[in-house]
Structure formats: C-alpha cells, structure tokens
Image (cartoon, rainbow, N blue to C red):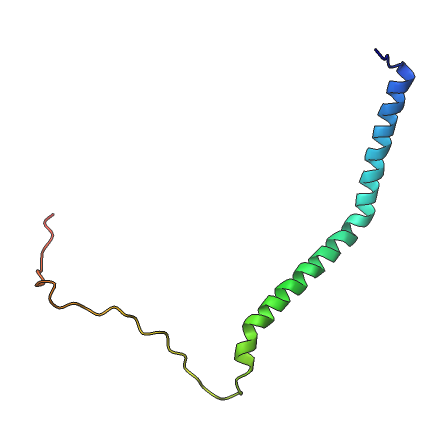
Length: 91
C-alpha cells in the first residue's frame, strides 16, 4: 500500500489551487470575447431566419395589394340535427 507524504499532499493541493485560479483569470480575460463570439453567431442565425420569413413579402411590388385566402373548411352545418330549444337559467 502506498503512503502519501505531507509534501506530496501539499503539492497536490497547490497544483489544484493554481489550476483553479489560472482558469478563473483566463475566464475573466477571455470570457467576454467568447461571449461576444457566440452572441454574434446567434444574432446572425436569428437575422437569417427573419430574412427567410420576410422574403416572400419582399418579392411583391410596392403599392400592389394582394389578399391571401385561407383554405375552404370542409365543415358544413347539418340542419337535420334537431330543433333549437331556448332556455332560461334559474338562479
């Protein structure tokens, strides 16, 4: 079985602390740059999606009016259901 000496434990703790503080400093320096990069990337993606949604409307000439009609619904009222009965609520 291996035994750890006090100096080995102290050295391991110091290495862990050194890595932690180095990581913390690097994030403080390069974090804003990384954040700007990702925000630009996401912004470009949103802009592309917005342009794709706006493209069909941009093909129409200015001043020209067009009305898009929705599909006809297949529902028609069935008049053979029964007769309508008017009722009153009793309080």
